[in-house]
Length: 81
Image 1 (tube, rainbow, N blue to C red):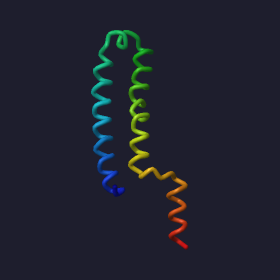
Image 2 (cartoon, rainbow, N blue to C red):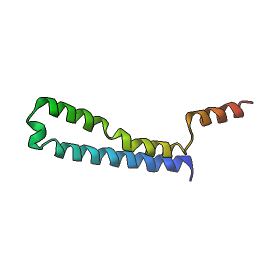
Image 3 (tube, rainbow, N blue to C red):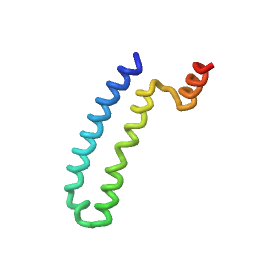
Image 4 (cartoon, one colour):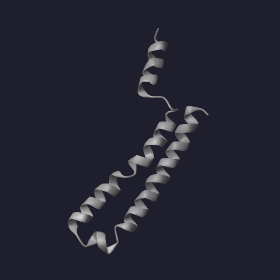
């Protein structure tokens, strides 16, 4: 699979992931337990706001073709010789 196709599929998947994450987070934020206490509400919003990053990391790694930063740098160095 070409890198361009991986990036297209990954971009669409990321948009769907973030959209669904936001809708679920907004629905859960309406629970009385969360809304009852300002400290709990703040903690919830921090966790909900940053939580989408964990499922997105493997997707972004897949989009890059499984290459690490060192692998990409090595290919660039080899092509300059």
